Image (cartoon, rainbow, N blue to C red; front, side, top):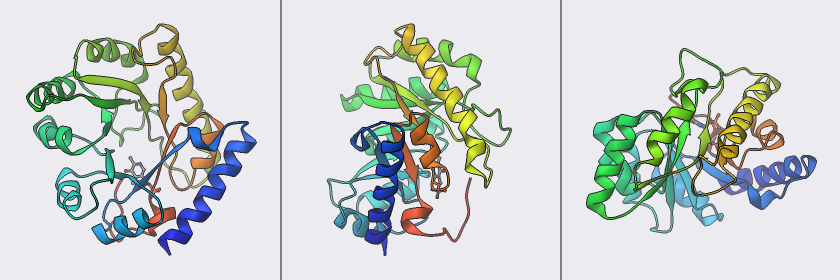
Length: 232
Ligand SMILES: *Cc1c(COP(=O)(O)O)cnc(C)c1O
């Protein structure tokens, strides 16, 4: 079932990319495996999926030991500074950096591990009281501060707009995130690349996100099915 879901999803990603005049290979799929067991990751891996997303550090840590070493994880949940050490050691990207405090905690742990990490800044673009992330007008200041941390490479922006069953309502938020990224890129504030990553779009609205420029989409339900415990 998981492999069939991935196959269908890939078709839809291709269609959305084509509609938008974009290349499907420019869109990375993060399979969000939160609340599903390691067996589900192994099944998706057998179908060719290597990149996964997790929201909880303990859950990620437990699964990481049970899956093939080629599997990599993006951390996509709210990260407390006291968990930064484990996140730095287990993830290929932290998508949810939203404070200098967290950036500094990551940087100091990465020093001791002698490695660097790619991160995204989470922006609360829809100004949703229930969502984490910095306000849009704080993005430039935080980006400048994070750029001073040698082990933390800010690759782009991530957002999770207010949920609405109608995916069209996500479109203005996705567009605003892209415009913000463009403004920051014009100021050369993404020091590693002129083309920042945009992580936006989930099961119900990834096609809209692709039309609006997403380079990373985070899809759970459409791959693994309904979670028994709904979160976020
Ligand atoms: C759970 C989650 C997703 C995936 O949501 P689905 O609707 O299951 O595709 C994506 N991003 C974040 C940050 C999440 O917490």
